[in-house]
Image (cartoon, rainbow, N blue to C red; front, side, top):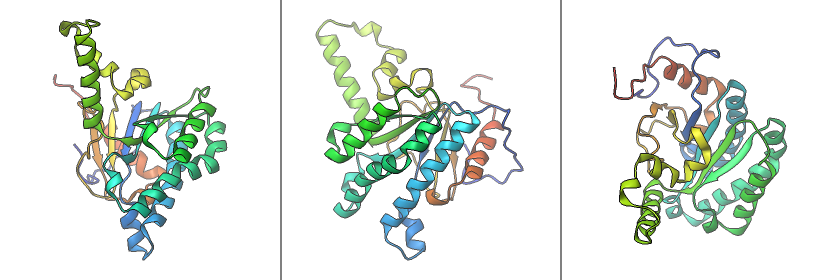
Length: 250
């Protein structure tokens, strides 16, 4: 597991192994703004611009799914003004960047509980999913109002109901069955991320894809999300390319 930008002389190989699914915990927007004596929301706005740049570059280098942790089920605890601004970002993002997403053949998907979002936010998200559903390039997958423990609890409840109704037997429940009951099942063969990146220097998972990251590679960087560049992404992938993934074997 890489801890905070290992000092290695690694170079990104475009013809090397590119992770098919990269998931990013976008962190540090507020601290980025604070360092500039600006309100936290200014950092969130800059972070939105970073999303566009990184999504397009990820598509160009061959990533199949880019999952971004945009808003967790715990983020509702933040001050109301900040939550309100965060809920406006998907509206602004898709309004400004929809043309770029379509031009670059990027498909939008989401995981999380969309029905609990404010109406304007939910409408913007659902329209983006609908407008890009025929795109065949990279999936830009937003984890929006998402929490992994809640996802697992709801999946367990649904499985228990099926067992109680006689629709499935306990013997049929295996890893594949569980994976198919999770939000990420819609991502097909790319449901589990190969590389997890967290920005801003924090070294924790924060209730993100707990089942799906069983064999993911981790990369932590001190870079705040608004400062995350194409070169930063390539450095993370270069580190990934330098690893020997054994999956418990030799």
